[in-house]
Length: 194
Image (cartoon, rainbow, N blue to C red):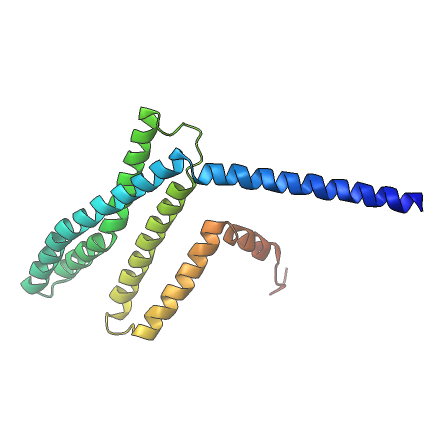
């Protein structure tokens, strides 16, 4: 009977220590979320997005006008290539500009000492991944449209492509996709003769 009592006390102590550990982690996590470093990250992201929107609207309109003027010049394959490249440049202009400006903002924050060199810039990394994923999605869509034609991809196919892409992008951002790929590589199918 005493053994039961001792194990009950030991289990209560382990539960108490586990609860203290969890509460300590939550407090540390909350301190990190509501720190000035996080505030500076959000300010940098907002500044990069705002300036990138301005650049996209201003220079994107110029790129679009250039693409229309090239399209009106003729149907030569060189003109179609220029139209494709200008349209592709206009499509990724926002993401590219936002990522570059965010890099400059982070460098400025680290240079001024507002964010330490070893700081965990979680929201900045998440923003980078979203910017690059958006640019990659637009490149894929433009290439599919160039290969099959703009009218070949209807709204349902476009929605399906968006769904698959953003699901894979979310799995990549969370870090699950590389593990899935490693598991899939570990399985082999015995096809053919050795």
